[in-house]
Image: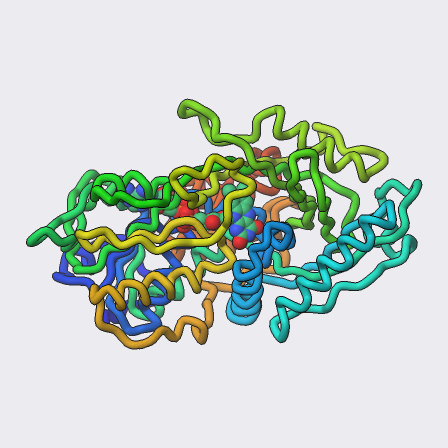
Length: 480
Ligand SMILES: Cc1cc2nc3c(=O)[nH]c(=O)nc-3n(C[C@H](O)[C@H](O)[C@H](O)COP(=O)(O)OP(=O)(O)OC[C@H]3O[C@@H](n4cnc5c(N)ncnc54)[C@H](O)[C@@H]3O)c2cc1C
């Protein structure tokens, strides 16, 4: 096992990359799936390399609804196994990443008796599936209790609400803390290091070619086990390896808006049924209200992935069916979109919202292993399943997984005061620590993923940008 400090400069990372002749596991993709595989790999004592084309979590994994949940909606689809599995993993996240994943109280407001019974029964099943992994059980809340938790709610016809608990977490920070943890256990994760091609030996995958985005230099890394964890793009690499599979990856776009809100009680809300058969969450998020999500076909072209006007209208109108005074576009302080990497059968023509969120491990005849589909909440289990499958296919000889026991370690503790802006809960000391320790290559890494400035408030981010740019430039000139 290579032993390296928890946080170390890029020059040292590149040195390890150059001098390591062979890895036990190479993972392509530094999102939830790839980091889950790497976490599981280091838990088995394997020499592990993760390469990420851009920044850790810059794909789908930094743009989720940030729920560590079983997914109440999937009960209606009959995906009991997925829900139970995710509820088990929710417990793992809340125990081992307690600094990032917290229990959040949610309310489903109810206005008629039919829905009251339907949602109450549904959430009781959710409690039962969670079993010993349950948080506080779901319960009936009176109209007065619901109104004090969600003060702007429409009162006319309100019967009360069903309260339940689920996990809520900071997805981008979890990516970084996973990187720190993987380093702590002897692995190596490098960002801005795209995979450019596979190396084959005797018809089997034996490594990868890489090219450093920061200077164009090329590298190779060798291993008999290469895992494709490239999210929505995993299908391209599978096709190159001539995998004729019964599964394909279908991407679907999901958008969020972040609202300035006077509902500061800590309660989230679930809208249990939308016009297109979805659920929408309104979740407290760093002093704001995160509302999402949609499920639509990805936009054509290469424009930046952002919510369309239709998606914004969709989210606001569903929310405003419940709130008075209504939320308006002027209340939106930030917004973001992501692409779900869904796995479906080749001939499945259903709408993406009906496609299962299960994951699959696919092994090519050349030995390339692809982990596709899934959910953030089950990232650790997806990693474990991937390595178990590789081991069963004799691509790897390793110890059993111990990832369920691994504590996810933060690289430092954030300040609780002296914030750079009243709306952005980060101090100058935090920013300096991040620059020194957390593999920041671009300013966007700092404002979008090491901190969540851009997903809290676009305006506040613009206001602090001159200070952050100066610190970033100083770091680039004088830092490591
Ligand atoms: C709108 C939305 C809301 C969601 N909400 C939730 C939720 O609340 N809870 C939950 O559990 N799940 C949620 N999910 C699902 C979850 O976010 C995804 O399943 C998960 O993030 C996918 O992770 P991934 O690693 O497979 O993909 P990604 O995060 O996209 O990671 C793939 C990585 O591969 C990299 N890559 C691609 N090509 C290369 C290359 N050539 N070389 C190196 N790297 C490469 C990409 O840059 C990317 O970083 C949500 C998804 C969406 C879209």
